[in-house]
Each structure stands twice: as C-alpha cells, then as structure tokens.
Amino acid sequence: MHTENKPDTSFSDYRINMLLGFLSVLFLVLMAALVFRLLYPKAQVERTPSPTHLIGEIIQIQVLNGHGAPGLAGSFTDKLRASGFDVVETGNFEVFGVEETLVIDRIGNLDNARRVARVLGIEERNIVREVSPGFYLDATVVIGADYERLNLK
Image (cartoon, rainbow, N blue to C red; front, side):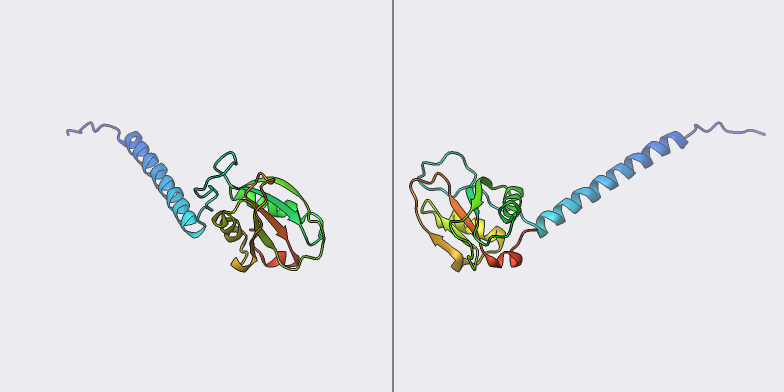
C-alpha cells in the first residue's frame, strides 16, 4: 500500500483566509466612509476669492448669543468648529430678544456668509451685509430665539 505524502496546507489556507478577512473588513470600512461622505458632505470652509486683508484660507466667525439662553454661543461654536470654520470670538450680542438667527457679512463677501448659513440651516433672508473694516473676521452669527430649529448636529 502506497501513501502519498501531501504537504500540510492548513497553515497556508489559514493565511489566505486571514488575508481575505482583513481585505473584506477594509472594503466594508471604505464603503461605509464613502456612503457617510455622500450623505454628509463636508462643508466648504475656505474663503471665496476676494481681495481681503484677512489672514488664512478658513472663514473666520464671531458667534454672539442674541437670545439669552446660557451656553448657546458655545453650542454653535462647537458645531461650526466641527464643520471646519475658525470661530475666533464668542460672547453676548448687545441686546437679548433677537427673534431669528442672523449671519452678518463683515467683509463684503456674501458667499462666505452663505457658507456659514448653509451649515447652520439659516435661511438666505437672514443673511445681512454690514461691512465693518475694523472687524478682522468674515462673518458674525447672532443666535436668535429660533435656535432650536437650526442644524446643530
């Protein structure tokens, strides 16, 4: 009776299975990242081309609480920073009782203000142009009583 000596292929099969498993997990992670990016596109935070005296490429924002609820400016600051904007100042607006949240264009470039408004879900009619040469930032967000309906997620 003659028996063949077959080489042990179990270790080779194990390595192939491990490699296939790793590649499958990597593929699933990449597909999930693609779907996430399609569902939640990254906000455009770079300034639009314009002659400006401001430094850097990222839109700089001031966030002011015009409603009066404690911690409101901080919540909006967190959302804007998570979206890639540079929040350079937070505080209270000169008065409380602002009804609707506003985005104020400070440098005469409404496209930058629109980008901020789009991320927060603020309507176009609530974008105001108030060019202030003494302000070294692109826009001011004044949070109003409608803050609960805005996009803070």
